[in-house]
Amino acid sequence: MPKWTKEVAIGFFPVLIIFLAFTGVNIVPILIAAVLVGALLFMMQMRGGITVGAAQERKRKKKGPSKLTFEEIGGQDSAKQELREALDFLIKHEEIRKFGIRPLKGILLTGPPGTGKTLMAKAAAHYTDSIFVAASGSEFVEMYVGVGASRIRDLFKDARTRATKENKENAIIFIDEIDVIGGKREGGQQREYDQTLNQLLTEMDGIYSSDTPRILVIAATNRKEMLDSALTRPGRFDRHIQVDLPDKKGRKHILELHGVNKPLMKEVNLEKTAEESYGFSGAQLESVMNEAAIYAMRDGLLNIEQRHLSLAIDKVMMGEKTDRESSVEEKKRVAIHELGHAIMAELVRPGSVSQVALSPRGQALGYVRHNPQQEQFLYTKRFLEEQIMIALGGAAAEEMYYGGRSTGSRNDFDQATNVVQTMMASGLTSLGIVNMDMVTTEELMRENKLILQELMEQTKQLLEEQRTIFDNSLDILIREEVLSGEQFRCQFRDSALLPA
Ligand code: ATP
Image (cartoon, rainbow, N blue to C red; front, side):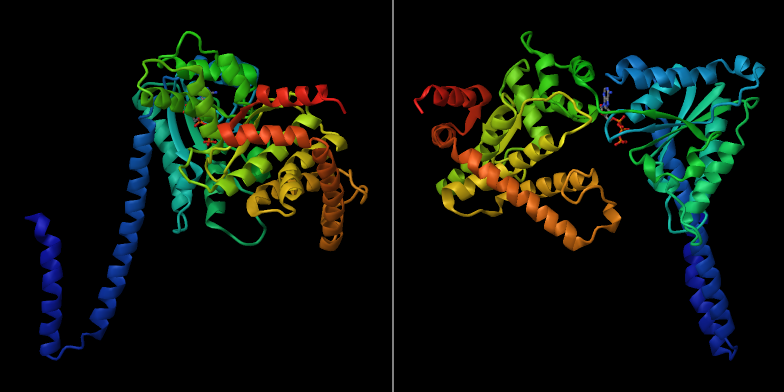
C-alpha cells in the first residue's frame, strides 16, 4: 500500500485545490507554498540522488582487485623502489613515531597517461595490506555547491569504516586526475572546486600517526605544474614520484607480463618488439599484445607470430588500416611525399628508416616508420634543423615532381613550426635570447618564415641530388606498397656504386 501513497497524494492535491477554489477560498498562497515545497523537495532529492550515486560508484570501484603486486608492474624500477621506500613509513609506523617523524600523508604520482600510476597505487595497497578506495577527480565536480566537498568527506569516512570493518590497520585512498580538483586557485573568484580542495586539505591535515586506521592518500596526475602549491607543500603530498614512459628494458618487461596468457610462437623476439615500440606507454604496450593476438586469431593461427606484433605496433601508433581506395595518381603523390620524408631522414640520420608504406591508416594515406633512436634530452641547433628538414621532405618532394604541394603536408608543417618555436624559446634563432611573451607576432612570423624558407631550400637541393634513388624507390613502392628499411638502403648503396 505505501507504494501508492505518492500517487494518491498527487491525485488528491488538485482535487483539493479545485474544491477550495469552488468554495471561494483564496488558493494563490497555497499554490505558491506548494511550488516552493516542491522545488525544495526536488533539490533535496537531486543531492541525495547524486550522493547515493557516487557512493554506489565508489562501492563498485573499491571492489576492484587490490591483489596486484609490484612484480606485476613492468619496468618503472626506480619509481617502484621510491614508492616502496615511502610505503615503509606506513609499515614501520612504530619506529616512525618513536623518532617523532610526522606521518606520510600523501604521495603524488606524476607521469604521462597509461604509464601505470593506478597499478602502482593498487600494488601499494597490497604491499601495505591496506584497504584500497579509489576515486577520480572528475567525480567531485558537480554543479551543486558543496557536493564535491561532502563527497571528499564521505570518501575518507568510507575508507576508515571499511578498514575498521575488515580489521585492517591502513587504508589507501587513491585519487586519479587530482588536477581536476587541485588546480591552482585564482584569487578572488570562488569556485566549487575550491571548496572540494579545501575539504581534501582539511581531511589530510586531520591525519595523525596515532590514528587507526592510518590513512595514506595517493594521487595521480599528468599535469603536476597545474597543481595548487597548497597541495604539494610539505605535510600534504610531499612525496613526488615520477612514473615515466618505460625505456627499452621496461617495455620488454611489460610486453612479457602481458604475453603470459597469450600463445606466442617460440621464435617471437619481444626484445625486437620493445625496440620497435619506442615511446609507447604501458597501456599502449598492453594494447599491442592484445591487437597481435587478434591478428593471429583472424589469420586462423594457433600462435602469435612476430609479424602480428609488428602489425599491432603500426595499428596502435597510427590507427587501423582503412579501406579508402585512392586513385593511381593520388597513390603516386603519396608515395612521392613519403619518399621525400624517408630520403631526408636517411640522409641526415643514416640507418633510421625502418619502413615506408603506402597503406592508408587512421588519417594518414602513407607513412614512414623510423627505427628507434638513442633517447636524448638535449638537442643541438643542427639536430632541430634536421628534424624540420625531415618534416619538410614530403612537401619538397611534391614540389620537385609536381611543381606544387597538396594538403597532405598540413601535419608536417605543424611539426616543423613547433620545432621552430622550441628553437626560438631556446635562443637558437637570429632573434637571439628572447622572452617569448615579449616577442610580437610579426617578429615571430618573420623569423618562422625565414627559417622555414631557408631549410626548405636546403631540403629541395638535397633531395634533387638523390633523384635516381627517388625514381627507383618510387617504382618499388608503387608496385609493392611497402619498402623495407633494408630495401631502401640498398638503393642508396647501388646509387653510390654508379659512376658520377
Ligand atoms: P591515466 O593517467 O590515464 O589514469 P595510469 O598511469 O593510471 O593512466 P594505468 O591505469 O595504471 O595507467 O594503466 C592502464 C593499463 O595499462 C593497465 O591496466 C595495464 O594493463 C597497462 N599498463 C600500464 N603500465 C603498465 C606497466 N608498467 N606494467 C604493466 N602494465 C601496464
